[in-house]
Image (tube, rainbow, N blue to C red; front, side):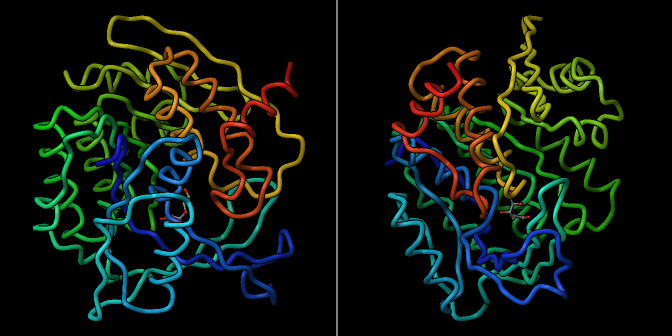
Length: 317
Ligand code: KDG
């Protein structure tokens, strides 16, 4: 079994080629693999770690494209199942240089939304050190929320360390209040929580990084570390013992596509911690991969290999 595992909904993404055009006006699109959790899996695998991705896909061309792309990235697909009963999720996105893109989903009642909970019992967690959890998978259906909760109990029983990225997607939740309530409840089950500062504002009601961190550190005995992502400014870290520090970020040479930075951040953090590095080193790698992510189109295309990351660090020196 792999050192790293995650569960999510992988989708085919059609991303518009020309920047800053509304989706309805774009005429050329490129096909990419998307999905926050699979992005993290790609990033961890590119850093040389064994990684397993758990999902359900439709037995359709998009589903088979996703499986092949995941395999090409060296990710274990033992726990990916195919179904003829539901489609693979699909989304469109326009490419933007600043801010957030327009996103449109075709994922209601998808194969992943109908993931069979019994499949969680088949997962061998014996060698797994880290699992990444995000607020997207539990938002796609009530069934996925149940699967998510069940997986969390299994991870806890197996002593697997967990990261949680709230990854707020208001379109997927029935109401803002419900999104906040469930996301904070799920966050409390993870050791490391990774909110962006804007998410902290929504989930906790403040943009002050130390207050966001205190909220999560106080709400649960399980949570040991909160890392508030501050974009180019880096990240603020606070731990259960009261230790706090900020790690400076990196400035992108050219922003090509803003999406995928947060997942790259998680991949950098986890891969570094898997190698036994300190939390400071892990947050530095997280920021570096987040910075590289925005310099390529697609969510995960810019995530570096070990050599590419070394070359990036050398350029900064
Ligand atoms: O973090 C990148 C994701 O936003 C993208 O890949 C799509 O997972 C996705 C989602 O649900 O929005």
